[in-house]
Amino acid sequence: MKLRLPLLQFVSHGNPAPKFYSAAPNNVVTWTTLITQLSRSNKPFHALNSFNRMRAAGIYPNHFTFSAILPACANTLILIHGQQMHALIHKHCFDTDTFVATALLDMYAKCCHMLFAVKVFDEMPHRSLVSWNAMIVGFLRNKLYVRAIGIFREVLRDAALDPDEVSFSSVLSACASVVDLGFGMQVHGNIVKRGLIVLVYVNNSLVDMYCKCGSFDAANKLFDAAGDRDIVTWNVMIVGCGRSENFEQAWSFFRAMKREGVVPDEASCSSLLHASASVAVLAQGTLIHNHVLKTGYLKNACVLSSLVTMYGKCGNLFDAYRVFQEIENCNVVCWTAMIAVCHQHGCANEAIELFEEMLREGVVPEYITFVSVLSACSHTGLVDDGFKYFNSMVSVHNIKPGPEHYACMVDLLGRVGRLEEACNFIESMPIKPDSSVWGALLGACGKYADVEMGRKVAERLFKLEPDNPGNYRLLSNIYTRHGMLEKADEVRQLMGINRVRKETGCSWIDVKDRTFVFTVNDRSHSRTDEIHEMLQKLKELIKKRGYVAETQFATNIVEGTEEQSLWYHSEKLALAFGLLVLPVGSPVRIKKNLRTCGDCHTVMKFASEIFKREIIVRDINRFHRFTNGLCSCRDYW
Ligand code: ZN
Ligand code: ZN
Image 1 (cartoon, helix red, strand yellow):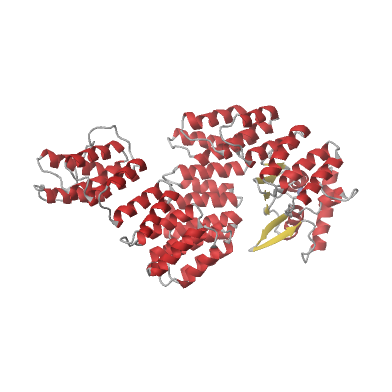
Image 2 (cartoon, rainbow, N blue to C red; image 1 turned 45 degrees about the vertical axis):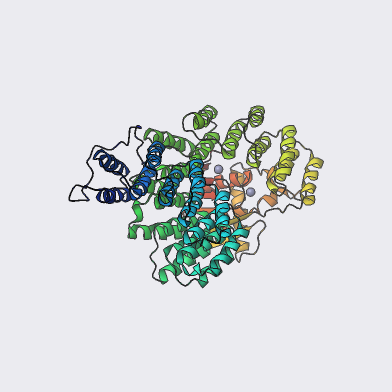
């Protein structure tokens, strides 16, 4: 962590400057060499100290000295250092020097003061390509992507300038950030015209731009055509696969890379772990863990937090926690990963405890940390704590809440039935509520079967996201529960009118190293008859223990067949198959693409008790870990 020191005149640390130089500097050249070395070896305070000593010795800095000291000023991240230097540069009349002025605007950009940078740039009598590049990179660094692209366009228009690899790769990065594929392609043409495509660095930026703009095929073509590839090229492709959800392909790139003798680095490992986590493939994630152990990347916080997330998403809370405990220098990313995993596993109290512990350790939480913490509060019904943390975001941590946080708060109020308050909370939001916020309220209306509010909220949502089948389903269920069957029908018809595609329920189960998929009503499996026999047996067993079918979860079904239809839900089929083929006592892990229904949830609880097995269902929202007839979510999801 960078230490923020009080603003003294070029403060320095107590220790003397290391001896890069055997003899004490005695002229401007030797002093400048010393300052350059200190500045480059990331000792900005030492560099500033030497600069002061040089001036105290009566030696005047020249333009080399200033361009060497300015990066050190930027590295202290204290603007006043740079501003004082700026005043000195003015005094010595170096502010018209292209070399010095470029270093000056670069310093302002690094200190996040683009206004000052622009002012310096505008006042420069002569500008080199380096000055223009410094502006592009500065805008990019400060996330002003459109401005970065604007400066690049000016460079293109100026016949005297010949943009180089820095200009191109920076502008490509800006295009990627604003997803401007059109301009990205123009830049591509320009790169080819100038013959810069042969540079690995430029080619990597292009591949990255295509991946981020969603044009994975174009990226793939470029990758295949690339003459030279380095580790970055491979990583860009692996990340790109992950982004376009081609997880299998991410793995084949990883294997291919190893075949070509390229040793995967931290970035490759952590991208691949993300890919494994997204599809929850434990076996592959474990492979990467072994690779990480062998290569010694276990010191890298990025890799470790990805490991925590991977184990968490694959349903192994225990392994996630074990990795977490072994992390030496736990940064906010690791803490946040562990908190999120606890929350997804229904251990909301533990998530909140971890958060408190993290604060005690002096780790500063981030935007995303609060999303997990607030959802943990909402899942445990801790309204007061939730508000305490929510308010602390602005008052203590200076983080502006985003839609995700507001949605958590609405969910928090909604779950405990304080619907009116939730509604008022939305009205008082300083930002425009999005579909996630209204969706949270609709969920609450569904839970408490509030017809009036449900209808109003659903109408807003139909406008905001007409394609989301979940909203229609929720409203139609509310009507059904009040016996308003005609109304429920109307909602379903509306779905047809709006051409909403109903997502088919789908569940996956891993057996050995194969994944089996079941859709609702699926009869395609070769052991279908056995599966249905197993389900029949399960039904009889649990009926004896008091199971009653929760037919409100059967939708779009001919009257009289509601109960039977529940037994064709994909997660039940996967469960039955798991019970048939997995060794006695071993856990059953199921993934589902939608939210699991209340009836399946009840059946899983019974099954975990009867068969003495742990059953883990990961639905679209969270994990359900069923043991001895209970679920980790405490029926609260
Ligand atoms: Zn179900
Ligand atoms: Zn549950």
